[in-house]
Length: 175
Picture 1 (cartoon, helix red, strand yellow):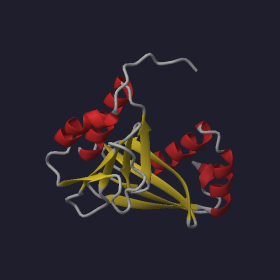
Picture 2 (picture 1 turned 90 degrees about the vertical axis):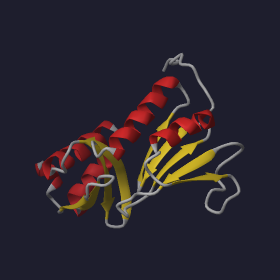
Picture 3 (picture 1 turned 180 degrees about the horizontal axis):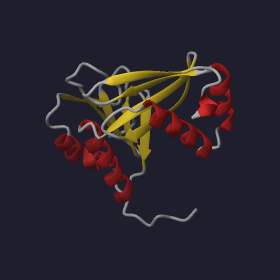
Picture 4 (picture 1 turned 180 degrees about the vertical axis):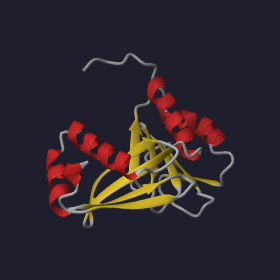
C-alpha cells in the first residue's frame, strides 16, 4: 500500500471547523482527565453534540486521527486533507439525514456497523448492503452465523427516526 502523500495536520487544529459544522447543536468539549474521557491524550479533545430529537449524541474525537461516533457506529479518518474532507462530508450527511447508521447484532453480540445513503430505510436494501459489507470485509463466518441464528438490525437517522429489522434464521440467504 502506497503513501497517499497528503498534507497531514494535528486533528485538534480542526476543532473550530468542526464546532462551526455543529453550531446549530448544543455541544460540550471534553478533554483528557475527565471521567469517561481518560482515553484522550495531550491536546486531544472530544466534541459531544446533543441530539435535539433525544436520540444518541454524536461524538467527534480529535486526537491522532478523527473519529465520528453515533450510537454503536464509529468511523475513523486519517489526519490528512482527503480523510478530513470525507469526515466533514459524512458529518454533514448524517446531520442532514442523507445517511443513516445500521448496527447489526446476533443475539446480544455486535456484528458490524455501517452507514447507508438513502432518504428512507428500506429493509431489502439494508439486508443486501449488510451481506455485501460482510462479504467484502472477508467476514463470511458472520454471514453464516446470521443465516443460522438470525440477527437484529437497528437503523437510525440523526433526527428523522429509526427502524428495527429482524432477520430470521434461514432468511439471510434469500436476499
